[in-house]
Length: 163
Length: 122
Image 1 (cartoon, helix red, strand yellow):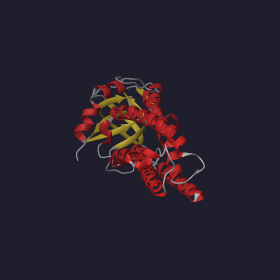
Image 2: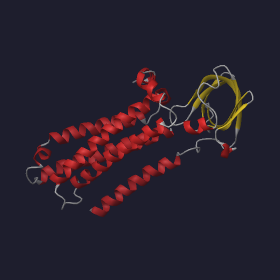
Image 3: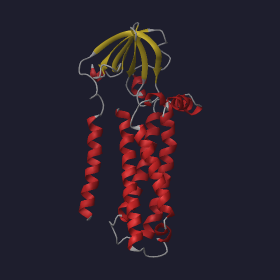
């Protein structure tokens, strides 16, 4: 898959032009927003996933799931809305960078996993009743995959700049 | 169960942090300082994590990385100051991989103008 034409398009897009014109501190500030987004996203997901994996069983899942998923959503929006401008600044620098090709598929898999987990009877029922052992296992599987995908995305994302 | 999880998570983070530090900063560059003279093919850009410019030396186009934008600007080097086609002399640490024409610059000189973007590294 040749991403070079897309990278060139993004770099020369209005967004790229605009982001480059914002001044010498802009990249640092956009980067800050990206990190804050990742903190909200991964911090919340980590708590929810560990609970689904069986840590802190005394904390009711029904009460934990709402605040953690809301914070994760806010974090995701912050990370995407800062990440695309950052990428647009010098997109062509990333041609051939292998970590991008790990990061974005990992994010896609993480989102598919969320979609699949949210469709399960277990997730739909967890705010109404106690879950059966099989249902708890299904959610624990989703949580393990979630941690694996998000940690892969974050690690490869961090490595992009060091390639 | 809990302590296994805790140690597992801590180990994963340490691994990620370890690989990050191993690649950080100037470690991919040579210790020795290289001096290059060439023609600017892409003038200084102050966008991105570091200011950059491209200089043609012989038949090779070098990707030059300067200090972060704010620091490059406060060293006096701003966008549009050095036009494409100008001759510049730069000093810095080139990439340890000599097949990559990439250098982190400490100093840039054009005519009588000198820009010390990393004065503490000179």
